[in-house]
Image (cartoon, rainbow, N blue to C red):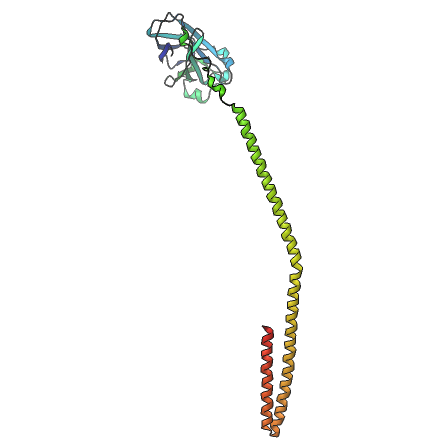
Length: 294
């Protein structure tokens, strides 16, 4: 617990000319008597890119400190223009108000500060060399950034823990590095097994592909031969049928011719018998062709 607590800070002259002094009304509370004084300090940040341009505007020792609520006014000079880069004079910067006890900082308050000309014309078209007499500063007192630090005060009981407490049971716990290494080894072994299984599956698939390819090579030539033979046989049958049908047609024509001659001669019975015989042959030839086609 902090022995001194900052209760409030009020910026008195705000806004103000750039070269005017800073004035703060500071209120704090002290919970117990202190053996030493409090040191208050105001720092001006001259550049956002380097701490070399930071300036300590002023410092003040306050003490002895009575127990209870205390209030005082802290004044600090304006920054030295020679220590600020010309390009950093105008624009936004930061001031830091801090307090320390026995060279140990326990509180810090930061404010944004906007430096600009007092007319819009000069802000829109600033001169090449800043005119300090026309520059005004505006401290954003409504939005301070307060940071507190735990320090040792007069008694050892108030000192913060510099080291973590001893934990004997932590020595019995397995080292995280060993466990992590074991987990890595298990993961690597599992990945190796998975890769081996994938390799075996790939070999088996290749072997199966080779066997199927061999089977296709073995069965391939015989199938076309059987198909060729079947097609040859079919073609022979069709040729035989076609030749047989042609012969039957010739015989029918001859029979019809004979029948005509017989009919002219007046032999009706014989003509009728020959005609029926020719029709029987024709029907028989049709049956044979249907059987061969099927």
